[in-house]
Amino acid sequence: METKIIRVAQGKQSTLSQLYINGVFQCYLLEDKIRTEKIKEQTAIPTGTYSLQLNTWGAKNVNYKKAFGKVHEGMIEITGLPNFSYVYIHTGNTIEDTAGCPLCGFGFQLIQGDYRVTQSVMAYQMIYPKLVALAKNKANKISIENNFQF
Image (cartoon, rainbow, N blue to C red):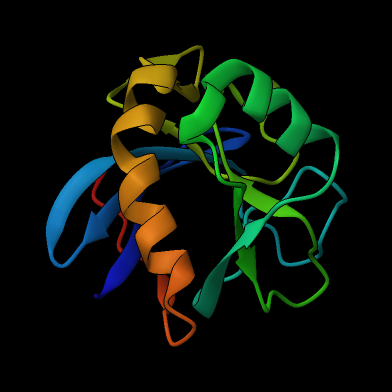
């Protein structure tokens, strides 16, 4: 399966992307601003090709197990990132919720120069099983590229 994050727009401090699995649009993603020098918890993931894995430890995992029950098998972690760790695809709506992680949503808004995603929990519940299946395949790859449209 081919998984891609394609960045389509930048706000003042935010980056809006689209998530594709096998060429099919799944949802929008929100990240922090793209920066040449990394600022902890305020920088988008660098472009490149990485892997997904299930992270089954840590506080965020415990919180998601409580929120999503038996469906939750672990956090979807993007691994192999230079100078980044514990980068999860998760729920949230604004850059204040990201800490450098992609947030999923079915829609988006541009408010005072920054993007936000909407219906995050619904989007997460829809893409989570697909991402779990990908993460369980040790040969999986996820590519991140810039293709700004607006």
